[in-house]
Length: 251
Image (cartoon, rainbow, N blue to C red):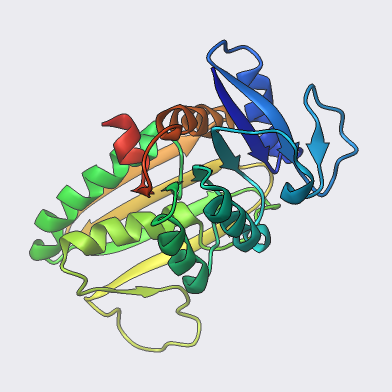
């Protein structure tokens, strides 16, 4: 049995993961951490990690970027593996993730879904062929109106995957409203849409002369992210210190 702490247990993803784990026999949530501890759970809920008395094999985080520094300090000190799902991290926080991974196992992913992680591989392969044929590259992501960060971590991960195959020669363009010039051949445009209850949509567009190739992924519910996070938690429990990602989980 794997014992898990849910960091951000009363958020939308925390509640989805809690419900999913309640139906499984090989993993259990022994405690939750959330500033809002007014929602009853089947496990004790604390407002801070320091208050938590329960021991765990792994922590799954779906809280906020503001809480990540403290979480990493805790995991580094206690040597507890952590599945870090929160997006919108600063460059300083990403550096801290790398530092923490030298002391304990850290799995960081911009998106926990199997489909997105397959898409990361596909667009990398496509970019190596299409960019050489003068295809322009654009990424459009859509999310619900409550999402705080923009562009999404997944959109940036897709851009990074594309750029990796192009030896990092491209730069990212987020806003063209102040530019009055033709599109730079070496740019990847990234656009964010926020509205309604859109769970998550990502399009990677390769636009060439007289033809367009588009890779699309649509999430219809948060369950796909919850399932991936649980798979990651099972994978990470007991792993040695190091930095892991979803590619390690899905093989």
